[in-house]
Amino acid sequence: MGPERRGTGDFPWWLVAVSVLGILLFYRTLADALHAQILSTLLRGVQITLFVTLVAFALAAAVGLGVALMALSRSLVLRQVARFYTEVVRGVPMLVLLLYVAFVLAPGMVELRNWVLGLVGVDPIRTRDFSLLWRATIALTIGYSAFIGEVFRAGLLSVDPGQIEAANALGLSPWQRFRLVVFPQAIKTILPPLGNDFIAMIKDSSLVSVLGVLDVTQLGKVTAAGNFRYFETYNVVALIYLTMTITLSLVLRRLEAHLRRKP
Image 1 (cartoon, one colour):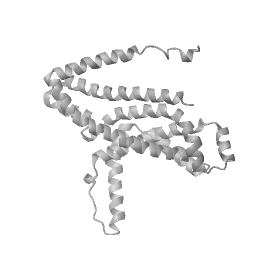
Image 2 (cartoon, one colour):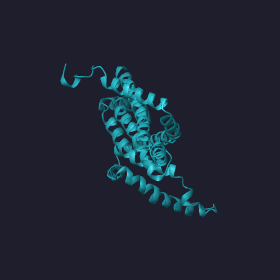
Image 3 (cartoon, one colour):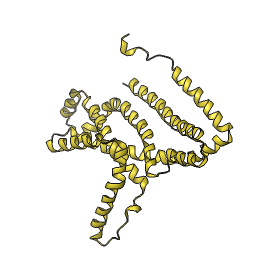
C-alpha cells in the first residue's frame, strides 16, 4: 500500500471528538435559559444564511461554467476575456468585493436601469430600493464564480481526449458531446473541489453582516451588544456554523465515495 493511501481507513476519532463536543454544547444550550434564548434568536438568521449561500452558489456555478467554457473556447477573444475576469476577480479580497458591489456596482446598476427604462417611460427607482441582501448575493456570486470556473475548467480538461474523439466519430453535436460524454466524466473530478467551495461559501456568507444583513453573524453581533454575554453568544454562533459545515462535509464525502464506486 503506497503512502498516498495511508490513513484512508483510519477510524474517524476527530468526528467522535467533534460529536461529543457538539452534544455537550447542545446540552448546555438547551439546558441553560440564556443559551436557549440566544439560540432561538440566532436561528432566525439561519434562513438568511442558507438563502444567500444557496442562491449565490447556484448563480456562481452557472457563471463559472460559462467562464470555463469560454476559457476552453477556440476563440482567442473569449479565452482572453475569461482569463481577464478570473484573474481580476480572484485578485480582490472577498470583503473588498462585497463592499465594492454594494456601494459602487449596485448604484451604477440602478443608474443604468433608470437610464435604459427611462427611455420607454418606466419610473426610476432609488439606490436604496436595491436590497442589501441581493447586493451581498451578487457579490458572493461574482467572487466565487471565478474560483468555480477554474474548478470546471480543470475538470473538463481531465477528460480523456480519446473520449472526445470517439464522440466526434459518432457524429455527436458539440452540445451532445458535452452533455453525454464530457460532463458526466468530468463531474467526478469537479465534485470534491466544488463541495469545498460550497462549504467555504457558507463560512464566507458571514461577511454579509458588514452590510447589516440579518444573517447568523449579524444577529450574533446585535445579541451580544444587547446582553453583553459575548462568550455565550459567540459560542452559539460557532456551534451553528460548525453544525452546518460538518454535516455538509460528511454528506459530500458519502456522495464522493458513491461516485467513485460507480463504473
